[in-house]
Image 1 (tube, rainbow, N blue to C red):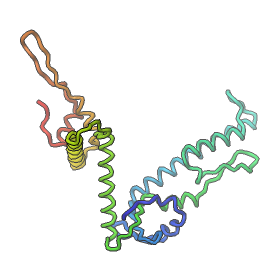
Image 2 (tube, rainbow, N blue to C red):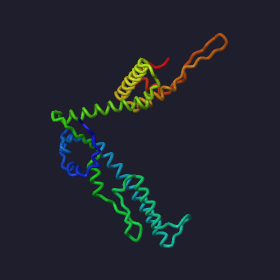
Image 3 (cartoon, rainbow, N blue to C red):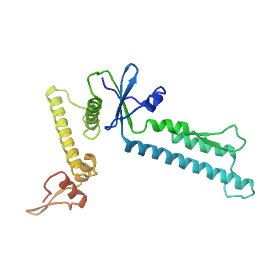
Image 4 (cartoon, rainbow, N blue to C red):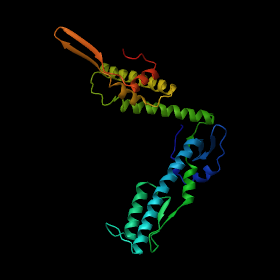
Length: 258
């Protein structure tokens, strides 16, 4: 087996992650629960996650400092419109904002203090940053190299994404058929749709296009063919295509509608 584990939930992995030494490919290996633990590290993703966390913490600290300023001004005799501020209200608002941001490990209100105050847990932040940008894979396959184990897991993840696409974008389920031939035909159509979806994704990625297959399909579905009848005469035409739609035809290597 090759499994992905939410490493942040296992306190015993903190020291393990501190001691990891990554090779040039960003891979390292240790032991976990009696099995090999292969860890892949993406420095760019790690920096992005750490920066996002610290930015959110900074926003909450700014909120707290603003509440402290209001309380201090009120104690100095300055009054503002609205309800009178209180330390209890500041505690309530601050703890609620921290909980909603899921950052209670890093910011704690000091309920023992006489006035509203808080503290920042730098040790907890440093510990969280240990796990940023890392994929932890326990495996019992002794013959796989680190790179092979990661490649096998990513291939499995790609298959699972395919099942999600079948259930969401392609909507394979529920299948309202009774006869076996009709069930097989329905599944075949959905499989062909998934194959086309994958081809779209590969072509868009190869051309560096930012649209996902779902977005591309939504944009292209707006192109309509119209037929108008005037007596015995019929007129045919397409709705006007937008630059975004024409870019998609180029990215997908398809002829543009005439």
